[in-house]
Structure formats: structure tokens, C-alpha cells
Length: 545
Ligand code: NA7
Picture 1 (cartoon, helix red, strand yellow):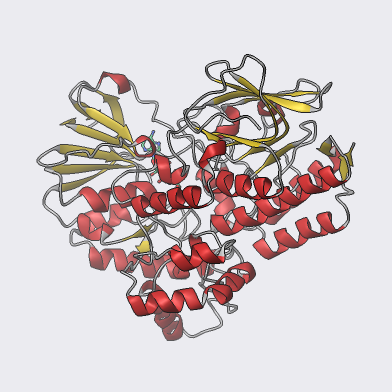
Picture 2: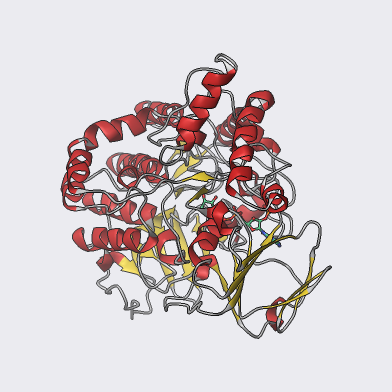
């Protein structure tokens, strides 16, 4: 094992060798390191940031917080960790989550195998040694039998391709590249471009502390109340006592959230009952209104229209100016067919005198100027521009690394028409490479999926070691079959008929204007059952050597 510390780089000119290299020290990478080290493997984690945390390291924008209940989001693998960590709110903010992940890194002494400030630019498989050579931006290389990507589905931020973008003289930030120092909003003229989950959290958080806020909205999203709250001592005790049951429940639900769809159709009940059910869901914490709604709201247009209509009425009640309310009500997609932003008095923000909503579909942004933004209707002056413009999702972070497989093929080329994977974990032609939270895996309440995938990958590597295998590869037939399965699962889902990061659309990235099926949209229990079956049969669907 190389003895370089967390901040040092290996000084030797020889290429350091490991059993496994993990790219990324977010939630996936940390747990993968823990599990592989537990098995006695020599592991190096290469992390671009200066700290652990991944998503929770980079996304420091004001108001960044969980939309999953905090207690259902933490790691479940260590009873001691569960006992000693107190979440302060039902939906914790980013600083707390980052502190949690730092605590995990310290508690399990993970940092000694993590190398920070290490941007991986290339990973090339060498057939002669049956290992990967992984190279950093500064040219330093590492060799490892196994390469594990833990690079996150939403980690490559994208900026709009607007003329004059770099000419702006004030401050500008992408939400996922937020500065570590506090940003002073007092008296400032601020704009937010983008109204996805991130934009919503940012807008509702800063509206009260800026001088003036202009929101540039291209597509309104359906949002529902988060209903966050502090966790008191009694609830804390109950949560801790109930962890085994709660995690067991997450294993059973469709997407590992605490919420699971109501087995009824929206039309099995009377209009009054339906209205009362929606009212109840609207008043409850978290994703219940999305994940715990009638079983057909995300597949049947008419059922979907009933909940869309209900939420539209809520927006009209909460926003005083009805012209503004109409702008905030989505017209081109139904409720929950894009990722649902959860909000805290978001709609009330638009009742403030210092907030203006600009619909840029009617008055498009023409250019960014040194002073601000020029639309087709007006020139705006700003001190701060905030880009809440999202990510090159799911495959974007893969595209940034030059992955080359056994015959020199590039992963990016192989995935030109959308990702092709085996169980969302492996790719034919890319032996000994495993992806955590890559395309075609169950995401949902992501730590639950992370723990499963990490354990599966750990099991596979242990199997290789026990059987003296040095080369593990998905077959082309296995990849074709899984990819077809994932595509078939997406048929009939309203979310697959809508443009969003979930269907691979990003107007800011060339070549990402065609919808693809990049997400596994079946149930998490079915996903795990399939993966368990593969393991139980000795991974005989893989090419083992
Ligand atoms: P999203 O959900 O992809 O939202 C990005 C927002 O930025 C969305 O409103 C976009 O409008 C808008 N956008 C993007 N590019 C432009 C340009 N060029 N001009 C104007 N507006 C633009 O990203 P988030 O960061 O909010 O959330 C991502 C996920 O992170 C979220 O779902 C959670 O799972 C956590 P559009 O809708 O494309 O018209």
C-alpha cells in the first residue's frame, strides 16, 4: 500500500499500483472505500475536490438541502454511526450533510486512502496486465486491477450558451460551483437563471436578503411543500429506535423512499375523496405527494391531470398576482413528470415587492452584457448572476473522462446514442470497470441504492479474488439485454415523454437534444432481485478470466 497521505501525491516515479482505484469521494466512493478496505484490498480514491462529500461538497448554494428525510438518507451500514449521529431537521441543509460525511470519513479513517485535488482525465485498460491506468490532469498515473467510478449522476454543471456570457463585470456563480466564502447579497441586484430544484431552493432562500431579485424562468416546474421542521429530542429517540424498521421499509418501496404509491387509481375514489387525499398529501412532509400518490398519476394522462389541476389551484391561491401565478403553472408537462422540487414558501416569494419573474419564452435572453442581461424586451442591470442551470446529467461526467476499453474503444463513442450497460454497473469491452450510480441503475433515494450497489460490487471483487480471476467483463448479449429491459421499463411513463435531465436533455450541451433512456425506471426491489440472482449464480453471465 502506498503511504501517501491525504494531501501528498506519491513522490515515486514508478506508477503506484492498487487493487482498486475509485474515482470520487462522495457518498458512493466513501462507502466503496470502506467496504473494499474491510476486505483487505489496497485502494486509492481520487477526488477532484479538496474535501470529501461529492454533491454535498460542491453544492453549497444558499438553501441547498435534502428532499429525502434526513434519517432515510444517512448510511445504514453502521449501527454505531446511526446511534451517534443526530440529524437536526427532517430535511437537513447542505452544511450539516457535509459535516456528516466528514464525520464518516474521520470515524472510519477513510482519508488516508483519499487523494484530493485529483482530476481524473483518462482511464485506459491495458490488456497485457489486465489492469487500468488512470491518469490525472497533471499527468500523474496510477495502476489498478479494478476501476470503480463513483462520479455521481449530477456532477458536471452546465452554463447556458448565451452570447456575452463571459463579459459580465459583476459576480457570477453556478450553484454547483458556489464559493466557500459567504456571498454578500445585502442591497444587491441579483438574478437567478433556472427554476429546477436548485433554482427553487436558491430563490426562496435569498429573496429576503437581496436588494432586488429577478428570476429568469424558461420552464416552470410543479413544486410541492417540503414541510421541514426541527427534530426534537423525543422524535430523535423514536427515529433511532425505529431505524431497523425504517430501513426495511425503504428496501420495500419502489424507489427506496419512505413513501410508496397508493394502490388505488385516482378514479377509484369520488371527487371529494380524491380532493381530500390530495389535500392531505399537500400538507405532509417530503415526497409523499409524488411517490405516495395514486398508482396511476405518473402513467395515465387523465389521472395526472387531476393532481396537476389540484396543484395549479394551490399556486393560484398562494400567488397574489394571477398573471404571475399563470406563469408559474407548468403548461407543457404534468405534475411529477419531471423531478419534483420541494419548496418552502417558494410561491410566496413572488408576492414580494423586490422580486420579479421574467418568462424568457416570451421575452428571450438575447445576450449577457458587462452590466447584466438583455432580453428582447429590456436591459437589466445586475450585481450578481446565479446560474441554476443544472447538469450534464448521468453520462456527462463519463464524457469528461477519456475511458478506453480493451480494444482501445472510447466509452463516449460507444454511448453516442445513449448509454448501454449491464445492470447499470458494467459495460462490454471495459473489463474490470464497475460504475456506481451510473446510467441504468436504480437511483431513487440514492444512499439506499448506493449501499446496495457498493455491496454488490464488493461481492464481485471478492469473488474474483477467491477464484483467482483477473478479468471480469460484461458480455455484449448481457449489455444488449439489460439495455433493452431498461428501455422497455420506460415505455408508458409520462416522465419519459418530457424533456428534462432525466431524459438526457440539456440545451447547453451539444448533442444532448434528443431524449434517451438513461435511468432505470423499474422498482428498486426488482433491480436488487435481478442483481442478487446474478451473484447467486456465480456471475455466470459475465465473461470471467
Ligand atoms: P435542472 O432541474 O436541470 O434545472 C435547470 C434549470 O435551468 C431549468 O429550469 C432549466 O430550464 C434552466 N436552464 C437551463 N439552461 C438554461 C438556459 N440556457 N436558459 C435558461 N434557462 C436554462 O437542474 P437543478 O440543478 O435545478 O436540479 C438538478 C437535480 O439536482 C434535481 O433534479 C435534484 O435531483 C438535484 P428548462 O427546464 O430546461 O427549460
